[in-house]
Every structure is written in C-alpha cells, then in structure tokens.
Length: 456
Image 1 (spheres, rainbow, N blue to C red):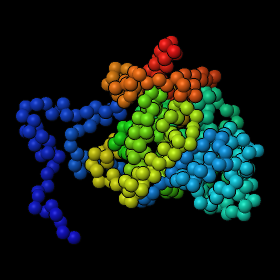
Image 2: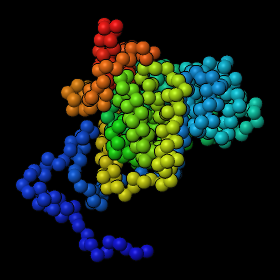
Image 3: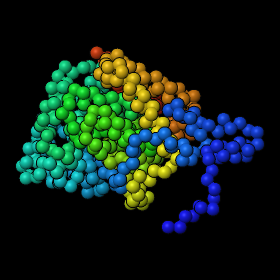
Image 4: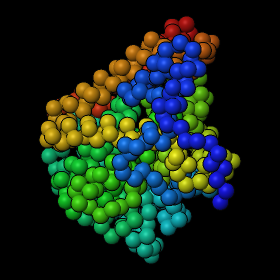
C-alpha cells in the first residue's frame, strides 16, 4: 500500500503547540483550553502522544445495533406495529401478568430481543418462560433482558428491601436456562436522569456490578446488561460508551470472571428534555442516538420527543424509531466498526473518563461498597451537588436549552398538551435519600405553564 505522508516529517505535540503559540501573535494560549463540565481540560489540539496513557481495550467489532422501543402496557396491535415498522427490540413495561400471553400473540421472540419491566418480575418471568415452552421454542436461543435491578429499586424508593438477595438469587435460578437472556440490567440511566456527571454514572454503575458480584458469586457476566443514559454532550458521550468497556474489563479481571463482551444498552436521557418547543427534543435525541451508535451501543432506545409531558402516541413512537432507521439506512452509521477509534480527541476523553470513574469507584469500594455508599447518602449527595451545578449553569444561561432559555417562543401555548405531571414529586426515602428523575427545565416549564393558566 502506498504511504501517502512519508514526505512529511513527524511533528511532536510540543512542536504543534509551539506553532499555535507563534500563530497567536501574543494572545494567551490558555484561552484556547476549555474546562469541561466533567472537570476535564480540553486542549485545542491532540496527537498520538495524547493517548499514550490509554489502558484497556475499548474497541468493539459489531457494526449494527438493535432499535428498541419502550411500550407502556401496550396492546398487541401496538407491539406488532412497532415491529413491522422498524423496531427489532421491545421493552415491555407494566403489562399485567394475566394479559401477557394475549399481548404477545404473534410476536416472534426468536427473531427479536424482548425485555420485560414489571413490578411483579417473578410472575412475569414465569409466564414468559411458559409461553416460550408452549410455542416449542428453544429457551437457550431467546434474546432479551429482564429490567431487573433490585439495588436501583431500593435507591429510587429510599428503602432497603430486606429480601433483596433472596429475591435476586431466585430470579437468577429461574432464568438459568435462558442462556442468551440477561437477568440483570444495571440502570445507570437513572443516575444520568437525576443529574449525575458522566464519571459518576460510570463509577456508580460499576459499584453496583461489584455489589452484585460480591453478594452473588455465581452471577456470570454474560447475564448482565448495562443501561446508560445519553446527554447532548456529543463527543464526551461517545467517549463514555467506549470508557465503560475498559471499566467492564477491569472489574471482570478484579473478580476473576471470564472475559465476556459487554451487552451495552443506551437510552436517550430525560435530563435535557423540555415541554416547550418540544420538537427540538427530536434534535436532542438524534444527537444522543448518534453518540450512542458511534460509541458502540448494542441496543439504542430513543425516547419519544414528548416523553416528559405526554403519554405515548403513534406519531411520537414512529419518530423515535425513525431516528435509528435514518442513522442506519441514510447515514450508514452501521457500516463501519468503531468509527471513533483513532480520533485522538475521543481517545483522550475515553482515557480521562475511565480514569476518573475508576478513581471514584475505588473510593466507594474503600468505604464498604455501593450499599454502604447509598446508606450514608454518599452517592445521592454527589449527584445532588452535580445536578445543582448543572442547574446553576442553565439558570445563568452558561448552558443553553434551545426553546427554553435560548430563543423561547413566548407565544407558544402548551397547557392543553400536558398529560403527565411535570412537578418534581420527590420521593422521600425512609432509610436513605431516594434518587429522583430531575429535568433541567422543570422550573422554567412550570412557571410558563402557570402564566398560561393565569391568562386563560
């Protein structure tokens, strides 16, 4: 192969920086360095020297991803419509156990990924396995996951379940024959939606995995799926999805587990979702889905543009599906494996995020692990502090939300569109602080809606 750049001499990072300083003609080089919200300094230039510290393998070799659609207590028609119009994975939420068989009629489990989220997870799993057997399908080949994360359930309620580990081990036992089915879903997206930084989301998710391995030594890594949220911090989010692979390898090594590919699920975050000018949310979820795809997510769940304030409808669901379809069929995001590999900037961010997350994870472990950190409110306080910092940036307009605190359409009326409560109905935990979803624009949205009502 012809080497195109042989006639150009190699330049070190120092030589590049010296050239920049020369071209600045006396202006301060430091003004070009950006202090990111993650407390990572971003330089104006990177080269191979910038990635020398990278430890661990963050590459992946799959090209495609599953398009997952979340459906709340759906009808059979809604499920079949989603599948026939582009979804290849389903997240079925809160379907009554006695309706599950009818709702899943004509759904071909053997060709899709089926994930279940239920308040009665054991009953739903029993019915699902019974349905697989009734259809004569091979249990070991059925793909999907249980959105089962009892540690996160405790954190969201602020209450410790005394039967936590007994229930956890029971679910693992029941699902043992579903070889390709994940029986634990680490809900890192909940940290994101509460206002955690990227490093915090990674570290706290890692600490949960450590807690599960420590209390259930028979748990195998091939039964775990990790769900991470995605913000509009484009390059940092790409790096986050690469960093989690490094961290995953490190924790498997620490527990002497078999080297197992990470099953990584992305969900577009609600943190920056807004009520006013809601179609801008489509731009946000497109950017978020792009980051997840380029970062190597195996499954991408794009939330509907009106998820913050309205019950799902056919139009919103179709728009959510179409984002991934466009990224695949028109932008060819699924034609190149690990396209961000070799980007010195992204690899630098990958390294910094993984180092920061690992340091925080080690701090949690040194103080007794995830449960102790939750019971002492260490995790909750860290997230609250970061969320407050993000809110301050929005309120001072150092951070912009288009249509909310930047170029808002003050003539827009949304009262009649709001179907869900957007109040901050904070759960007050009994045993420790509960983790609550916390949208950045909530206060602005509430103030504008109140003005609408007063002038109605």
